[in-house]
Every structure is written in structure tokens, then in C-alpha cells.
Image (cartoon, protein in one colour):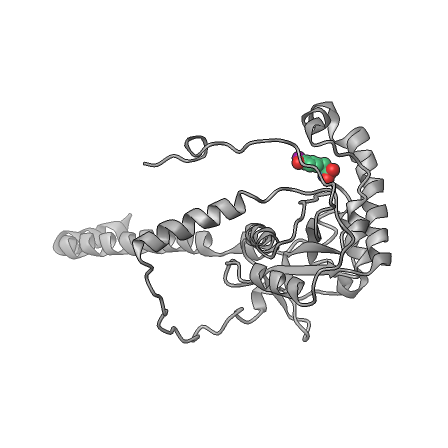
Amino acid sequence: MSSFQELAPFLAANWPIVCVAVVVIALVYFLSMKSEKQKEKLTPKENTKIPSPQDKGEHPLSEFAEEKQDPNEAPPLHDANTAHVLFKFERLPEKEMMTRSRDFYENLNQRRSIRFFSKDLIPEGVLENIVRAAGTAPSGAHSEPWTFVVVRDPKIKLQIREIVEQEEFTNYERRMGDKWVQDLQFVKTDHVKPYLEDAPAIILVMKQQYHIDENNVKYPHYYFEISTAIAAGMLITAIHVAGLVTVTTTPLNAGVALRELLGRPSNEKVMLLLPVGYPADDATVPDITRKPLDKIVVFK
Ligand code: IYR
């Protein structure tokens, strides 16, 4: 009580300074709390956390089982001082733009999913160019989170067929359900997939959740799903432009067995299987049409 009485004359004499001091202290406190909250929001915990194979319900591959390294400690994927150079670009005449875009659409409109393949071999070098084209796809932080496994060995193709057919039998029988199987009837496909042996090549598109370099440093990948899906679209386009055919095959539940057959590490997962080659002479396709432009586009 007595100390308050001593303090009162001090407050009475210096109240403007005391008020300013209180306001400044409150302001500093408020601002520091706000910046703490913002820092929390900016910490990319979710992006860089790499689930262990066990988290993802996968078989741990022995070579990564001992791996303890935190990807947040990896150096940047690319040098922060990477030079920026002038982009060389030449505008096309407007008429040329019109014909090129129309021709490209008309060419792509000829593409069909083919399930009957000739056994004829693909000319040397064509598959390499097709994969090169897919590898030009954009990717999160230019992480290029894909691997394309090109299988031409007949023994491996047969093993792929066996794995896929075994899983697809269960898929069609039990996993897909009646409605899905019914909706697919017009395609006339089932679990039997001779095209996996007949096609001279199968390209497996693998998406990489992260990568580990030769020094065992683990780097996170960003948007690896969408990046690899874009690359897959470009791969399918490149196959068509090269004068070959394919069908997107996505066998449920066969991914781990296929990855292990191909000796690929657990940071990779099978996204698609693409048999590639020429259509069989008697190949057929369902007589379907595509949605017209006004059903797939909204201009605002
Ligand atoms: N993956 C199976 C089933 C299948 C599913 C859809 I959706 C298709 O458009 C086509 C097939 C298969 O390849 O037979």
C-alpha cells in the first residue's frame, strides 16, 4: 500500500510518458505474436514431410530401410543463383497460328486407345525420342519427378502380363463393383490383356515422391502427381505423333509387384502402363464420339 502511495506521485507527474510506454510495449507484443503466427503458416512442413514406405502401406525396400535423413536439410534442388537468360521467341503470323492449331487438333483427334497390337518392332531410336518429348513436361520446382521404364524384353513383358492379369481378375470380379464393370462393357475389355505381350514395348510411367542422390541425400519433390500426369499426357501425344498407338492401362493393386519386378526403388510408384506399337491389322475400336467444344469449354 505504502509503495503504491509512493508510486502515485510519480504517475501523477509522469502520466503522459507512462501511457506512451504502455502503448509501445503492447504494440511490440502484438506485432511479435503476429509474426510468430505467420512464420508457422510459412513453414512448409506438409510439403516436405516424406512418409515412410510403412506410412503408405508399402513394403519397405531394404536399401532405404535405414534411411534417416531429414529432407529439410538437403541443399536446394537448383542453385539459387541460376542465371536467367533471354527467352528466344518468334511470333507466328496469325494465319499460321490458325492452321497449325487446327491441324494439330485434327491430328490428335485421330488418336484412339488401341487394345490389339501387331508384334512388329518399333524402329531404333523412336522410343528414345518419345521419352525425350515426355521429359520436357513442366514440373514442380523443376524436380522432374518421373522415370519411364521401357520394357522390350519378351520375358519381362510376359511377367508383367501375368501380374496384371492376376490382379485384374480380382479387380473385375470384386474390387471394381457391378456399376463400374457395367459402364465398361462397351469397351469389350476384361482381365485378359494379350496386348501386354504382343506390343513390342511397354512404357511404365513411374512417379517419384522424392529422390535420393548418390551421396544418400534425400530431396523432396513438389506436385509430383500432377507433374507426372502432365508428362504422361505428353508421352501419349508423342506416341501418337510418332505414328504409333497405345492404351492407358492402370491396373489397380498391381503397382508394388510391378515395381519390384522391374527392380525400381520405393520412392517410385507405378502411375500408368502404356503398351506401344502398331495396331494389329484387324484392330477394332468402339464407335464413340467426343464431346463438342461447347460442352467442354466455358469462356468468360
Ligand atoms: N484397368 C482396367 C479397367 C479399366 C478401367 C477403365 I475406367 C477404363 O477406361 C478401361 C479399363 C483395364 O485396363 O482393363
